[in-house]
Length: 279
Image (cartoon, rainbow, N blue to C red):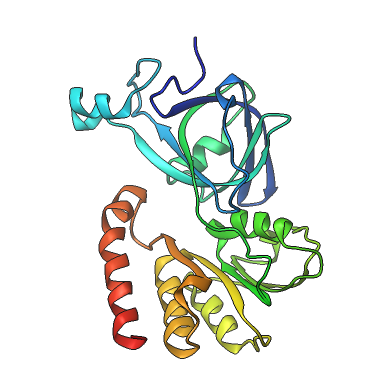
């Protein structure tokens, strides 16, 4: 069976290994011939979209998603889940993805919890658009668990000695990870401790003293806190839009499909706020 994308944009990969890196974070390493020609070296927020068929539904190989949606009823369409590339080793042809695990709820988390060597998965990608600007005076990295893989990748990319202020919100101390960097990075772990996602993070960022000079900022995660911090950075601190990579990866109360359908409107609302408050 062919494992490349075969021109359809869909790739097939095999689970090489999986491990729990914290009580609620699972690392899955993918490999196989389907990764031939894959590249994820330009950005530190590269992402792929995993493709999950409904239970009991088989797809032809190679899979053409556009054709499938034309020819099959909606209840046979796959569900897609977006995950940041935590690491890509081109020499070993290994793609590393980290999954937040919320128990049996959800789709990708339970799949990752049960992943075993030899399991196969389909995906599309990569996409991406952010990498730390090496000319910036300092870097601001902010996110929740969903942004932690991209933050970890960005820290590894920062130049030696580059000043960085990093805020990561997790549920509690057990979810902290070791993050490697050659930068002069102050990494602040913000513990949610049962509060709403993002509330402690916004408080921590607002209470911080920022270094002087031009920042390059990466702020991603749950949509409500992202919006609050965007207002702070754009309207209050007047950070130019081009110095920000800022977006909602997900939103409370929405699954991936409903958030994708709503995100364009959300982005327009945020842009309108920019125009009204910044000009």
